[in-house]
Structure formats: structure tokens, C-alpha cells
Length: 364
Image (tube, rainbow, N blue to C red):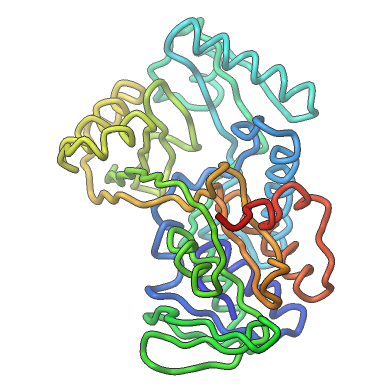
């Protein structure tokens, strides 16, 4: 049973059905409509240099998405158009170029342009100084998470998976040996289960507690705005401009995010004001967004384990219980889905997950 059908849960469930496993997909809401649908959805490893093993896992995640697109088809969810980044002050610019150099040394594809070249070759609508360095990562992408989840769930169900959407997990029953035996849902039904995958995102700590497992999580809210850009969005790829992140979200829509705006969420600032500030930063980077308007906003809580890294794999103290909990789920969903499904079926952990095992979080 897979609990939580965002990008990680859908990926695990899809891969398990391909192994011939009987799968039940459970979600308190609708698949792909939680944090998966309200993230920046940027597929990358350029922002993952804090630990080399985490970088390599994200590189594998990028490759897994390309393989997935070849398998299920890329239409409506996969946009491998690269990613642009430039800075707004000398210190940030030096850090940007230092990171680009490190990534190049690690074998990651990096291209550097002037602002004028970036406008001419890639994004004509940018308001970036002509001589400013702009870093382009051509292998990066963005994903329409809700569309991808729908595709994975549809294929999983077509090959035999069952689903229970709109109902939450209330209890996980274990046998005398401590192994998973049953799952009780909020509608009162009880299902037999040989294994449970906790892919519950922001609710993962609650699900873990049902098997007396301590999973420490950060409280990390993020504010996302979607803006309408009829008749067509003026940007073609994901980008990090000073103070704001911008990406297309279809032909006539754009997604905006900013860590600086996230920091204001708990100050009591009204969502409308957060949206106004975010939109203003976006207009400075892309003046053509001045004619756009905010359509929807949401504060979503990121599923981030306490040390900032994924928690993926079996928990030996609870046989049959597995975790698939991570920030950067959009980048990692395809690879974690494949690796965890293989671990469940074969009982062996892939080396890519060696640094991210759940046992690193001991009981309090």
C-alpha cells in the first residue's frame, strides 16, 4: 500500500505495478493536487551541491525523468528546456560563477552567456544587463507535476492497481513480530497490507507515528503564485532571477516563487500582499509580465526531513514499513520510485540511497 499519491507515491506505485506487485494507492485528497501541484517543479542538480551523494542522486533523477518520458510519453508533463540563472549584486554573482565552476568540474553541463547573448539566444523578454553573466544549464527541465501524477496513476490502475482517494490513513496495525499487517482508513474500512510506503509528504511524520516511528520534519512553508499571461507566456523555460523564480506553466500561465517571500509567510502578511510583492519582482525581471494578473496562490508545506535530505527505504524496526519522504520530489520522484520499488521487491538498497536511509533518525 502506498500512502500519499503525490509525485513520490505515484512513482513508487507505478514502478511496483511494473514488478507485478498488487498495489493500493491511498490519498486523503486527490492524487497530485497537494504539494506536488504547488511547487516550483524544477528538475535539477545545480542547486544540490551541499553533499556530493545528494548531487549524484539528483543527476540520476534527471536521467530517470528522461527515461520515463521515453516510456510513457512526454506530452503535457515533461519540458526539458533548460534553466537560466543570473544574480543581482557582485557577491551573489561571484557565488553563482563559483557554483557553476564546481558543477563543470563535476561533469555537469554548464553554459555561460552575457545578458545580451541570453536575450538573443534564449529569452528575449528578460530585463538583464547586457554584460551581466547568465548561467544556462541545458539539461535541466520543469515538470507539470499534476499531469505526471495523473499519467502514472492512470497507467498503474490500468495494470491492476486499486485506489482509495479522499480518505486518510487512521491506523496501521502490526503483528506480534512488529511487522505491518493492516491499514485502517478514515472511512472505517480496514485493508490487509504486507507493506506500507509512507509517501505522505507534509503528513509523513503523522503516518510514521502510527507505527511508533519518529520522523523529524522541518516546518518549511512555501508561497506559490500562478499568473495568467494571455495570450501566451513571455518566458520559455525555468529561471532564477534576482529575488524571484519564474517558469512557464503552460501556454498562457506562469508560476512564481521566492525564498524571500517565503520568509514573510509567518509574519502575518496577507496572501494578497505576498502575491503583489512576488509579481513586482517578476515584472522587474520580465517586464512583459506587467500585463499579467495573479490567478491563484497557495501556501504549501514542503516535506523536508530534519537534516534537509531524503528519507528513503525500509525501517528495520518495523518490517514492511518504508519511507519515501523528500523535498525536491519533482526532481527525485522518478528515480526514488524506481529504486524504492526495487528495494521492496528484491530486499536490497541501491548505493545511490546509501546516505539517505531512514535509520539515521534514531528514536528521540
